[in-house]
Image (cartoon, rainbow, N blue to C red):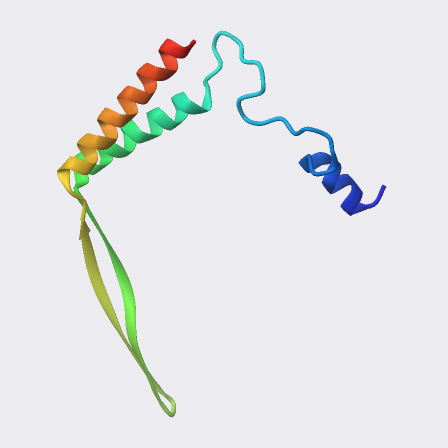
Length: 103
């Protein structure tokens, strides 16, 4: 079997249905993708509340004059609003509540 034929069979493009993330049967202790996404949202919201901003360095101007090379590094800071963190925590909590009631 060549590469293309096996690719189409594995990826589901060859008429064989492909299983999605939610098609697999879970045991009692298995975590669904929705619960994982909810936990990630809650953790991101907590990080936003704790730090509130992040900064990065960007090189903006490059000058080459013969053997001399010069560049200017610009440090930028992005402030994340407080309501973004609170919204992520509330949204993650609602998503977690939805996932637990669905079961």
